[in-house]
Length: 26
Image (cartoon, rainbow, N blue to C red; front, side, top):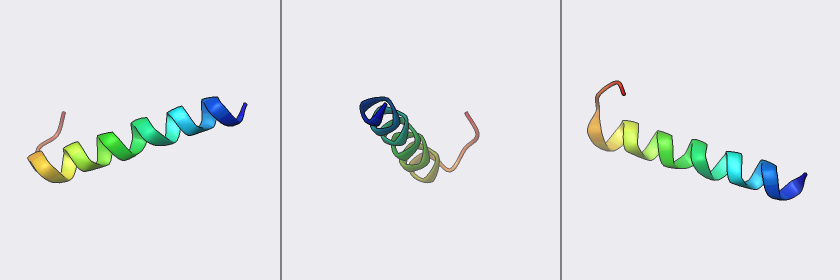
């Protein structure tokens, strides 16, 4: 369970960084 939550958190962080870097909607 912890590993799954960690992976989800990582994906969310990557998505946020991508959104801030691009400044565009995906």
